[in-house]
Image (cartoon, rainbow, N blue to C red; front, side):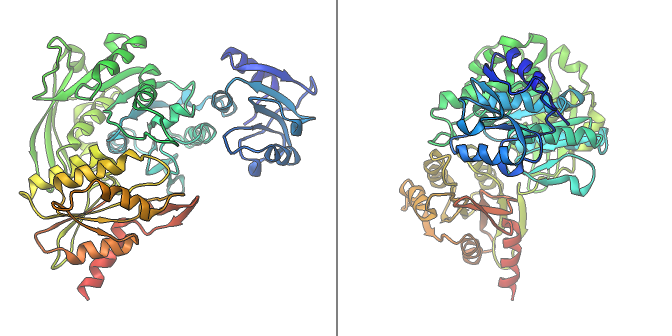
Length: 516
């Protein structure tokens, strides 16, 4: 991979990003590296000065390691002797030039993208499961949990971000193409648009699943309006659009889709009993739950409009991922697969046995309660999970192990208190990626909103000890929910990814200890 200085200038001008340029030589060599991390510069490299934590010394280090050109929003003395490209927005420039450096890998992939406050990961895994049944070993995945860039085990690795930085994103897309991948299913976070990680990227199919207040805080979105605005950008940048008609703020969502997408390229879906405010709204697909228990969920997809019938995806489906609320995610995935040429027969086979790490994993502990580990990490997902378990077990005693991340999602703390008041009998407040905040203080913030006449509260900051105590306290008919981290193999503590054995591993270890 390589890029010329001339190509950089032309691309930046094309996107109205270039303010000025200072070229040291008209015969500049091709740049065979691209980076925003001075520690990763080797040889002739295009280097980006980005981020609030950027320091000029990083540019000096990049220069010493061989960087020949830097991109920044202002000139730096430390860049004397380097070609300088001064831009209006360095993260937008990074995305545009990153795509070009890796030779526009998105053009060789059929890209399906999901956004939503909840359900992105589940829908993405469902979609990949279906597409893999139709195109074995040819479907890449960029999710909150995993990034899969090829068919081999060493081409699958843990994600550090739901949507990676643009240079990492296009690098991984190129890896996927070079490994023979033809399809990509990806989650797109609101942060990806806020920070221009996907600037200039167009999706073949884009999904808007839902939106509820979340990710509002000093290090995230300043307001809900900003959060919604960034979510809507996925629709503006998709060739075909699928929207859950039951989402909050539907009118704004639908209007955003219609600004750039023709009506025939917008597909709406909803549950069988949903009645839109506008009775003329063309709901294309309905899904109807026929059975949902603690082992399977069975439901039917009903095409309503002519364009829906043409996709040939109507019929009955079965999921091994329990929870009736997953049927909406599954419906989205099946529509996405249909828009990618997969019919009902292959879709039903592909989705039937999909399992998702950290989502509704279960364990029965001898002499104690039924344990559920789930990634539920905001009000909407927690409410869906706890209300389902409450209904299925007929109002059981529910014990919830829960924390909240630091440095982001501050509103979740009050939201967790609210949902605990609604469904929990006992809460075990603990740590969950505290970052640079105090885990103890975060737990206290959650506790402030809990009605302790209704919910018995335990504060046990050590997460393993909290899980152990909750299970040990439980009786055979109780439900223990371990929420928040799912399959995450680390805790984020003061900038360090501290290894964590995963919640379900701890559950099994505790079960063995209690058995002894």
